[in-house]
Length: 174
Ligand SMILES: [Cu+2]
Image (cartoon, rainbow, N blue to C red):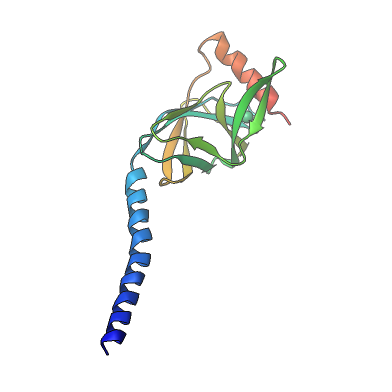
């Protein structure tokens, strides 16, 4: 009888350990990453009529102590959002889709900006207009989803701005 009780007790202990350890770890991970991812200056540019693609830029800061990955982005304003990296190859700027997502290491800020990482809003439902706010949902591996709004900023800035824009549009006219 004693032996049976001992056996039963150890099984219960083993199960408790097995079940509770991962649960605690998961809760902890959830708490750790929760509200520890922040977005700064989410912005975009107006698109000329007939241009099916827009851009998305922002700085993503991961203040948690674990690496996270931006795996997908959605918006009601576009059929699809892809994450690209611009790479200079032989003096030509080329785009490479990040098929495995954009890693944001613990404690670091990754900037999406012209000539660097950026989001492409493909199959726009209508041109992006200056002053518009474009809602995006960022889906992270290792952190909660985050809703942000891209502020569509005017093109009236520097010549560099329009030059960049033409380059982007040209690169994406496939
Ligand atoms: Cu691109």
